[in-house]
Image 1 (cartoon, rainbow, N blue to C red):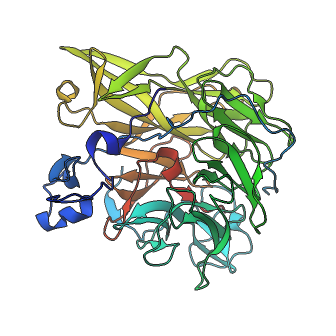
Image 2: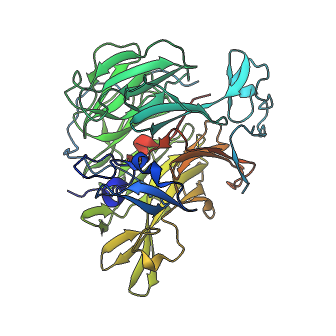
Image 3: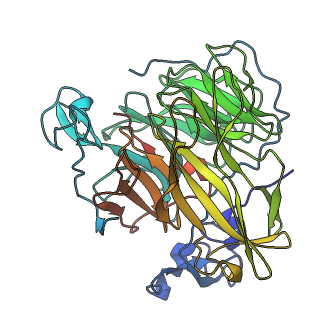
Length: 490
């Protein structure tokens, strides 16, 4: 079985390790007594439980290698149902994005409104005023925490009570609730809970537990735009539950990376070794015509019929330490009718003395209207098949090439093909996520959340880069798309 590269396994960063006699640390927070790290570096707790300096490089994480399903068996007739969906200076947050380029999007933050379409980019109509959209992430303050924050105001709030672990926050389709896993988030005892937003003092409502849904942990969870909350049972198999509670329903026997279509009923997922499956109108999932059996991590946008996914059709792999990872490319393909996948971002290989500097694609995400896709290109040194991510010790062939770079690629909304050259958004960053109006991109850099306004016509960064300082919480990335920032719907 091919395993994914996991940052914690390779570098010991952001990983909670077992404690032993004489250990200097169990996580990076134990290294705070070392004082401030030099510019461009940070203190980490390495695999030997010792504090050491490391460059601020956060490779993209996919955490997809735990699929073990055969990928063909499904439970017929079960719907994943539901509802309708009607280069700037760095500055700490609090700045308002003066977008408003779309007709009607002209009411500033705090202004009166009757609908979110009246509000400027990054805002939604809440209690008759335009207010900042929330972003949900998973962070760490010595324990794992599901967090929400206004996109433009620093200060994150934990969804779980003090001392209670939580992870994987996901907004509901109307943006008025957020779901997350709390308790033992890495085991079957974890609870799937919901809270209203804006947050109230009321305790979270627990809907179910991993134990109640096949005795496996809850992960790869999704909610918006459906009314049912959807998740993967441990490493494979998809379940759902109503946002009001009740008994969990098994939607598929196998598969992972579920994603919901704009109608909230159709869904796609990937099954190890069998590629992308799609369920339409509540029907039995079937392979997406034309998609390769190596396809994984499907994503719908909110407008076009194109499905985004990663694949490795020629089975090229590379080894990082003891882990073997596929060298993935990025494609789009119509959900209806299938066809020939359109290549949006290919792998690369550049010669260097003694080896090559190569790259693969990870962590893709659509703009809501399907006009842009964001992705991470991960660069690594390759010497006779042995790989080291650029920016890390030993990657001498890379020179100044960063370990990972976020790019934006314009996409033809009719054909799904790439339109023009990719636009660089950020070096050494990962997990890009478009706002629901398509005018802001959130991502994680150095354990902190950033939000970059973009020009929707050109994809170029514009306005003021908003930074959420890494003080109480470090934003996590080591579970890939499960940790991608999620935006509150408008």
